[in-house]
Length: 102
Image (cartoon, rainbow, N blue to C red; front, side, top):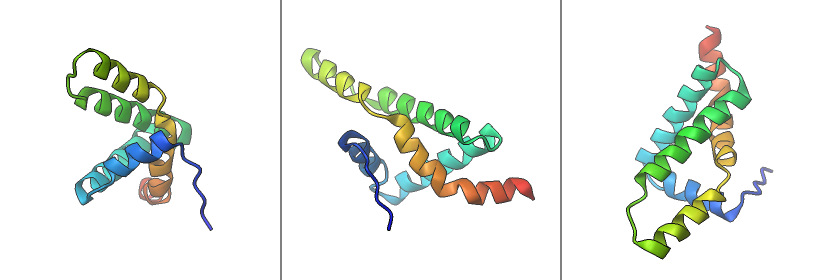
């Protein structure tokens, strides 16, 4: 049985990112590319994807006035991007490792 102890923030962001097929495919491709770019170093792959995810979310955040901007920025500062990335890297690891071994 698989049990995942995600923080609520990580779970919520991942839920929104994977809420449709387009988002799922985007994360799958991002994870595959991170594994390839890392040359099969799991920690590097996770860092590459975590950085890309954080940048994407921060760049996609709409402009909000004053307090609302501060609240969003503060909430995003507590997201463990590595936790989200690790989940998706693990999903594609064997497939990409096999591809690179050929």
